[in-house]
Length: 451
Ligand SMILES: *[C@@H]1O[C@H](CO)[C@@H](O)[C@H](O)[C@H]1NC(C)=O
Ligand SMILES: *[C@@H]1O[C@H](CO)[C@@H](O)[C@H](O)[C@H]1NC(C)=O
Ligand SMILES: *[C@@H]1O[C@H](CO)[C@@H](O)[C@H](O)[C@H]1NC(C)=O
Ligand SMILES: *[C@@H]1O[C@H](CO)[C@@H](O)[C@H](O)[C@H]1NC(C)=O
Ligand SMILES: *[C@@H]1O[C@H](CO)[C@@H](O)[C@H](O)[C@H]1NC(C)=O
Image 1 (cartoon, rainbow, N blue to C red):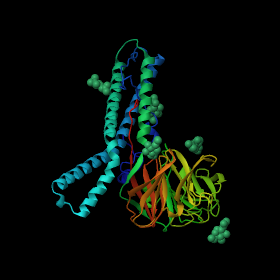
Image 2: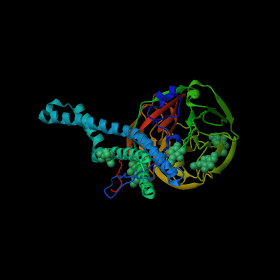
Image 3: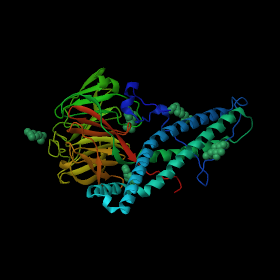
């Protein structure tokens, strides 16, 4: 059931990035449970041949289709959790290593030199916060397996019913499928999002353009739009290239050109639902440019936002206003004089560009290399140069922050753009004239319904 909306030659690039495309029925999830949280899949319905003209026969077919959709969603769910399970497994093996070393050390204290001891301490520090979630996670993974089996059972039962005769309660059947749907839906929601725990090795897609720039695909979920947009340079430009597919982008072929009515500033552009959102040069105005009609749909000033290189990221380049999108919608990251240059996050209404809500992170924007949003959490790097790491996280759901230490390989030593694509669950970066992708590992504790 895994279908990645990309040409086969690109599959190696996208790896486990799953597009929740509409064809996969990703939006339709299901599940049912009784008092002990178990699915009951006893389903009965009129036989097909007996009541072909009975509307219930059509309804039964719909139910079957729905269950089929559920089982597809389960497959996707399973693949998505696979990555997190790998993380848990790695953690477990790391724990075993540490445990073994600790045993050796306690039996023979001299076997451990100061460096080894420090390493051990670091590893333990890395593991401590995970201990309480490990068991919970394993239970959750079991729950997914059970849910899957239940869906299989339900689909088998439905198939048998089609061949049987009788007058049965369609309404009950429907209710159960609906419940199954609700349960799976909440399970998927929880699985879709999580806390960033790791960034993969970089995958260089192409070497092209100047030192600074921006490239991206559409960030809206769901979307089957595979076009790639390429915006070279960081100020006063107007030219945006649109490639038909990622494969075309890799080969540098099959593109059309858009010439923006207003020039841009920085590299913080984002494509969301078929429109480019960008900061207009020498202003704090955000412009929404619609690709299909090649027109500006709306423009609006981001109240108080610094611009014209007043509050850029550490690399400069008019990067005062950074637009981005995640699972929760469209965001602007910037700062104002009244926030004393500390990063401010605003959630934007995509049609009107009105600010819906604002958070003050307290993190100085000039000390940030770049930032990107995943599941409502802003992650900030501490530099654009070699040695950069993801250093700070701001949680909009709880209006709280923490310092993080998530390394990533800054292969070409000058990152001027870094954005998460929630559809592909990848980071898009522009690194010194290279277009580079990273996979991310999101960790989440899935609570079974009822806890
Ligand atoms: C199942 O998924 C297909 C494809 O996404 C969709 O067209 C169809 O409406 C879904 N069926 C039901 C009953 O939800
Ligand atoms: C699925 O069906 C099999 C065989 O009828 C049964 O043993 C199993 O317990 C069922 N699983 C669930 C989760 O209901
Ligand atoms: C807030 O979001 C983070 C990750 O984005 C998640 O780990 C955390 O559990 C959420 N907190 C609440 C209270 O929902
Ligand atoms: C996406 O754009 C279409 C028109 O192009 C619009 O009808 C739809 O509401 C938009 N969806 C979102 C979530 O903005
Ligand atoms: C932007 O900055 C440049 C030089 O730093 C200055 O010449 C120009 O007047 C500024 N424009 C605005 C609109 O602030």
